[in-house]
Image 1: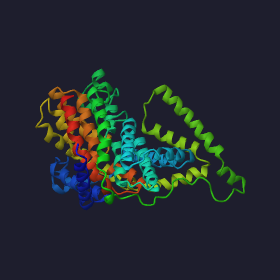
Image 2: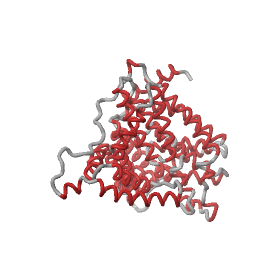
Image 3: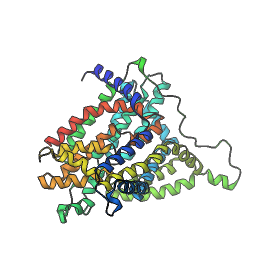
Length: 464
């Protein structure tokens, strides 16, 4: 692969995106308008006399959109994401974590080495657990950028951010993938839609996450992507180094305690005991269930580990308070994506998108066209579980008619969802908050990865 070609392509994509890409909040507002317009144009009349008219349909659609803002599952998921971000950064703010980060960040001697290290860590950790991978990769990239700047090594900080964001490139092919894990349960909404019962209603992980073609394509991208990202590093004169980021961690108050209450606030004993109790349960959970992680387990682990690592309750609360600032984008945008999800489900827009691709498919090509449809749907529904909820049923119905394995269709939707992260910036919001970047800083480089990875994933589905 021509390194100079990648440098030029990466630079051109970065400049283009910085000129044309709106702020992520502006983007979600634009997507809201587009989704409402498309839904209104394609949805069937709503039952009732008023529902047959255009104003009646519009009124019903807006009602569903607003109700989507209060979707309890969306709000629950949003809070889980916020907890992953703030507790992850709070762990990084502890003294032991800062010492570990200092050792890791001293390893790379050059900018390409740093980018390769961050990207490889991001892809691997994201495959293991997407939430942990996203937060830990962002923190590692931030501290690597700070370390290189202190040592006088020029590194393009946005490219480090791109490397960290590749934690979302393979997540839906990894062991916390939403769609495959849902299909591996005995009873799920898809089995109800398809009218399946018994063993047929469950798709084992051996046909999805641990299918040979999926493991092979994950290994290929793990080897390929880190050097590709490093080869996009601009020339020294075009390098943009990180600004002066505040040091993480403020463990000790400046004044000594003078009362019993202040000593309680600043003692390590209280947080250590409570944290140790929580970690003892989590140890038993892993012993009994293996590496069967979910959001609640990860959040509990991060919360308890942070308490154990910090010097006092006050120090931990202060670290949490500082990291909350980076979650503003999630708080603001999550309700709007909940509204879009409700609109697509209520109006049947997702099924219309799916049918466009299904109509051109055969048994051989259905997985590939499902993959393309998933990429399109990703624009409106960035959540993997949310996209599977709206796109999974129609695609699996087509698979049943054409005799295509359900596991292959599940992974086709998953591949489109995870690859779509390379142009849909929603899941970069936690990373951007932690690293002090903007979406337009990294998405140009991400688009190059999108172009490179699309045919690789498509071929894996076609020949797998």
